[in-house]
Length: 409
Image: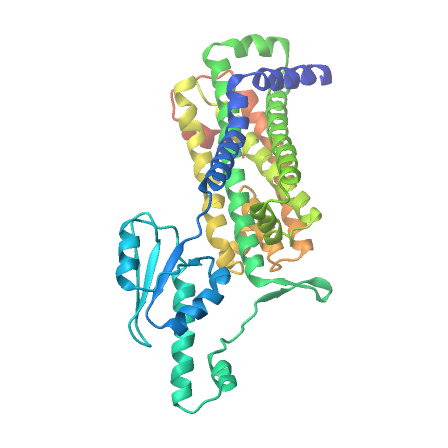
């Protein structure tokens, strides 16, 4: 039996691994990411000098302050001080902008269509500070008193972790949301790819009547478990390729500013949590494969593949949708319950764990429930598969499934 199972696993794995469609699925995201990264890198390099040149017209004392602050503002202050000359230069597009100061409370920034980006907020901040200083002086306040009044309130956000450690609250929120969305998207996309793959394979064999020949040489159990393990091995290979590609990409561009920012944001993630999340996703994929094989055994031909995977798509969408909203309500009662429900818990529990609203014992229990459900569903499903893989019924697939479940009860 083991030899026969091994043959089916290898055949299923090799047939799909060598196919053009499999590598198109695997490489498409990598190629797309590389193209986007190349475009961003190329545009950045081709931009050249984008520092805007701005003329300050009006109060010369204010102009001198801008000259001293030009590096902070990331702009070059033009030597032009005459309004007419500034407007002429602006028309000729030799200036990016003209700031005309009309009073202590009013100023106008004029730009031209091809102007480089000008930091308007920074200009407004300097002019606002100068205006407040002049008003405070007229009220008899000292420079120190004025600075104290204009100092913004500093509210720092931190998230307290174990061992009295803390992390940046903004980074933690961003990381939590990113993890939630990533797990939801990865699970949904991978599930859709591989459930469709196994459903199509079973449908092809049944519609072409090859299944009778296969079952004459091996048992239905060998075909059932061999196909699922083979497809699951493809999914594992798929994820390993992404892990290797991601690792190579990280170490190749670790000095890049975007990569550094990304690493800092997700610095709270530990190796243990990463392994836990990957295991949960793999168990979820296996669950969906078993469910798909069970339902696909009721298919008569390829025209029923979409009908078979439609309920699986709806089920996978539940976790996918909740992955976008649960970071704002991790303690919601419904989310707590769903965190222990197989087929959707993989999108709930890892995020509740990383946000510290759930402890590791709860996370392990949820993973164990999903794994036990996988074993029970696989054992239950082999009976339905064996009974229906050679059966051809005109009834709707869901009607057949309900009848099979009722009979087994």
